[in-house]
Length: 617
Image (cartoon, rainbow, N blue to C red; front, side, top):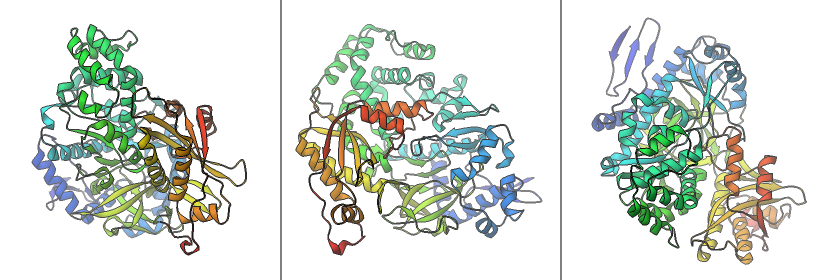
């Protein structure tokens, strides 16, 4: 076997007597900025060629797997792939993954050994999916992460003068009956760093690796925060996987800052921190009493308002890193309130199935974030979605898909992935809008999940529509120093006509203020939500009277933490958890209903005119 150089892409193709295989992203030296940036230019320029090589490599490698043999029968050309291999959802391939989990060999779907089954967040459908991952693919994802990190360092000067305070949390692992590990993606990443060789981690992160990998999330969060407070002058950036995760850290800080001050003042961690690795890790920070620092933290945290608390506690921080696209967009105002003007960076679009795109303009406004597809991460096809209605525009039994290079600016698509770890023409369920191109690689704005979240009669309300409506309504809270902390929804069909119910958790901008919203304000919020929904909803509500008045139920503070704990107890990860925008699970509804403080109904009917028909606003 020989290594034959090709074009400027830097890709090396291994040629044997039977096939040509395209290499994936090489292992990167993140300190070599010039080489990494050159690689990004190359892979975004030679998109079609790389995509063709990737598909050829995946098909030739896996030709003898049971799955591909059943559809392709040895025909490995691109035309046969598109003609004979079906576009599938998780349920279509679940039986193969279950068989592997139960001990059958990986070559049911993949020629490489599957090293771990990744548990997805589980909040879209309520139960985590199990996604196959090979060791080789994990290394690819590390290279992808290095590239996305490098772009942040390129755009923000001085980050290398300090360290990162990134709040990462692992979940307790489990095993299948055959002994295959089941982990979240983040847990797999963190566990891939060996404690005996964690020098790179220690050079770039404030919290020791042992604290970030503590399975007790509460102890881990406490100790990560305490490390960051003690070493506050060395924090150059902060963040978490999602905006909601970072805000949970801020809430935890609000609840525990007196304990942090006590620990710093005495030089001893609280007795309830019992995890040996956490105790050992924090001991390197609490080396002696520091009453001066304790008084400073107490002074900042005891102020009436927590506005700009991040820059007040970490004055040398230059950015906050967290995903703020899709359903996370609702948290942008809260992040901006706490951040003190720091840029909020949404650096990449990744899923359990595949790492897909990188934000090449990390300093853009959160509302303008787009992700450029990295074509070497998998073979990408796209199923066009009917704009504004968030539904596949073609018969799902025989969908029409387009290649990565053939997408059109302004059109909406659902990604269809073929990966190196055994997924073939797999529908992700996200909706992306093409916003332009970087070189020849399209970049997309993440809109949300394709699945309709609420529906009564003929109306179908998507996640994006619901988020826009709630965003409009919550503006009414600001003059009253109230903030919407989180929300979800459901359809109440127990009476006729059925109606939408929103569960809102409110917070205050002012410390210790009473959360007693003016009923008139909340009733007007109900109306604004309805007025912001599309013409179909407003027609059915006003003209046909087949939808009842929208209802907002205000829940106790902490209700959404309790909801998260429910999902985490069933396999979701704290780091990957995203509040579901609609809830049908009975246990989840019980959690919400038992925490309801007050109820408000829309007293006005939304507008609708005959000329609107079924167009959307």
